[in-house]
Image 1 (cartoon, helix red, strand yellow):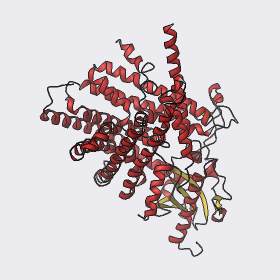
Image 2 (spheres, rainbow over the protein chains, first blue to last red):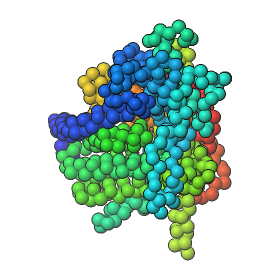
Image 3 (cartoon, rainbow over the protein chains, first blue to last red):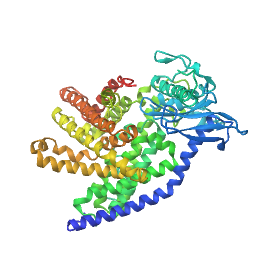
Image 4 (cartoon, helix red, strand yellow):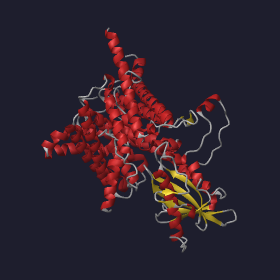
Amino acid sequence: MKKRGDSAYNMVIVLALLCAAAGLALGGTYRVTRGRIEAQKERERMAALRIVFPQVKKDGFREVSSPKSAFAAGGKYHEAYDDSGKLVGYALEAAGTGYSSTIRVTVGIDAKAEEIRGIKITFQQETPGLGANCEAVEVEETLWDVLVGKREKTPAREPKFQAQFRGKNLDHFVKVGNKYQNIDGLTGATITTNAVTDAAVAAVKEFKKRILKSSDAE
Amino acid sequence: MSKWRIFKNGLFKNNPVFVVYLGLCPTLATSTGIRDGFGMGLAATFVLLGSNTIVSAARRIIPRKVRIPCFIVIIATFVTIVELFLSAYQPALYKSLGLFVPLIVVNCIILYRAESFASKNRVFDSFLDALGMGFGFTLALLLLAFIRESLGKGTLLGYTLIPGFEPAVIMILPPGAFLTIGLLMGFFNWRKNRGRTAKCD
Amino acid sequence: MSLGTIFAILISVIFVNNFIFSRFLGLCPYLGVTKDTSSAIGMGMAVTFVMTMASIVTWPLYRYFLEPFGLERVLRTTSFILVIASLVQFIEMVLQKVNPALYKALGIYLPIITTNCAILGVAVLNIDKFHDSYLGSIVQGFGAGLGFTLAMILMSSVRQRMEMADIPKALQGIPIAFVTAGLMSMGFLGFSGLIK
């Protein structure tokens, strides 16, 4: 390293040049990747919506802004309309504190907010092998099968944990003490199981009460 | 030192994780699976390559007194580039590495090599050194991830190894990481000591 | 923010998600400085102080400067680490002038703290978990330091005892320290689920 150039002037010049170069590099990279990052986010959002309402087309979803609440974690929820313009249901953005992260769930409900059509966990950083299994898809091939070349890949399935929420009425979710009676919990991950279920149920109930102003919600 | 020696240095003899004991935080945290471990290893290697090369190229211009802030700016820039590219092209990996992607900037290995090698050597040599150190780091990660994933999840790369095998979940939890690395280090020490006593005979 | 919430944050970050035993942050000083309890306490205090100050400074930087200009993705890492490095320099200078005795006790640890992943880690975690709460961030930063100090003190007490134990040569030093950390980490697993 240069010893002579220790003057304050020199140090400032070098640092300034360095920061300018860094700024250019970062700015350039940002411009190159920004489009793709935004597209990615949009794709994930749409994918979650389509999973809970497979029969609704992309433009059948209408975004509704709402102050943050149990059912609008990102400040919005969606209305879902089928091809004939009929309101099929709603997609709520719920969130709940899990074991090691805030879990975000998209919950699809019918138009009367009485039945959960399906859920899709959109973000979680729970313990791998335990809570993270909430997103685990059962893969039937073993490593040996893959190495040997048995090519019949299992078609992409819905994670087993999330699939059990499909088409369940609200009163299916009975909680006794700390456990949901009718939910197949994740092995060794009660906290994650409860976090997801609590978040989904609370979102539906609050949605029913606040938006639909239905009288039979508690 | 020959070019080959410079590269090989970081792989085994001066492996940053098992010999110099650097970069331990990401090694333990991201070795829950081979996919994650490999991803982290590659990301850190990329940053190391970038930082070693630039630091070496600029070594005659950077004044000694401000060298650490300069190194930090250079390293942080490369880390941000990696963050942006990962979130654009490998969002699943980015999500699962989580906090540890920006933490590459404080990975002691990178600052250590910038200070002790790149600032005193030519560009190509620094590049090779970075490659060796980066690969050494990745090897350490893969070794740990191999043990933890196979014992803790019963899978490798997501595919089941032995159907019906009930994994020891503790291996993918923090205690498993600590125990595995402690025993591995002990094992490597033992081999090193054995070699030494044998030579004395 | 109620006192209860503050307490919950502290319990969560000191025990349930201890930075060393659950999150793997801050391992380098953990191994290097826990050979005796007094240096462990010194390092712990220095880290707690820097973490709290870092939380106080980085949160508004992110919320009121980076986010409004849309720069949060591009400049977060760089600005955070530079702020932390400058903060540590600044603290060192001030400490030297204001309290030379304290500087003598803690000053040697300060330069290493810059590359301590726990400091940058807590700054990033603050934004993740307490995006909307400044007080929450500061409490988490302070608590993280306390948790770190606790882990350091526990570790150094055990290591001091181990000096007199008959440990196989290959495991002496760092390896057995890690195995010990593993056992302690198992103990800390027992705290999971304490905070809903």
